[in-house]
Image (cartoon, rainbow over the protein chains, first blue to last red):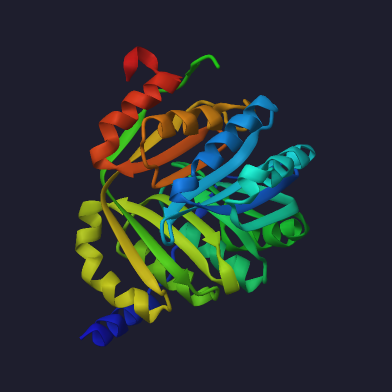
Length: 172
Length: 160
């Protein structure tokens, strides 16, 4: 039953012609340092202290996403301007944080690409992810707000991805 | 830290948080899922995707509860077929838009937000901050408490 239903869905999708998607703006952030890590739910106070300390150290966060899932662990991803990343690294390597952080990742040269308008369009997300896969670009993170779809990539992939996105969407 | 003035909070209730865990890294997964949602005219209230181990990704989507009810049976058939390891569904959840704090140019706002929520014991299911906006997802049962706490952290026009 489930198989026949699934085949029907796939058939419908393959018959459909994807509609063009019009975008108005593509904004590239300044160079960023990217960090991701996981914390057990009972250790989320580490994130609170980290963000408070970053505020005291005048570190701006251009991108931050958190998602609670995966066996009660919260996954954090954040970007800060490159000159501030030593500060972030120092705080994450402090004893009380380092002992609790799991799956740590740091990319020294990343950036955030923001596409407008998102407006809840699932196909926009699908096409961006499709371009990333086709071009072999590793996506470091993606998230949305009402009007914007943002994705984080390594700086070295910027020109390739922007060229790919220019081909996939109609730009106004 | 002074309470920053922001736009009125925008609350979207009767939402569902879908977490697709262990999604394959290939093109087929995202192409099929998002094309399907587009074809069924499902609007995405919020999306967060992150890489996990072995080229897999984890994808969190928030969609309207009523819209999900129309596709739930098909979605149940679809996710195993496109290689997703598990689908977790949380409902009802609410999405709160915090517009205006400028997280990207004003240090300390994320710290104030997280400290306030932690002090009140509110569990944020998802938080997505990009530049000027934060979208916070909480269980609907925590909505009133969350609004109260956000108004303690930020100043909204006439308490809106």
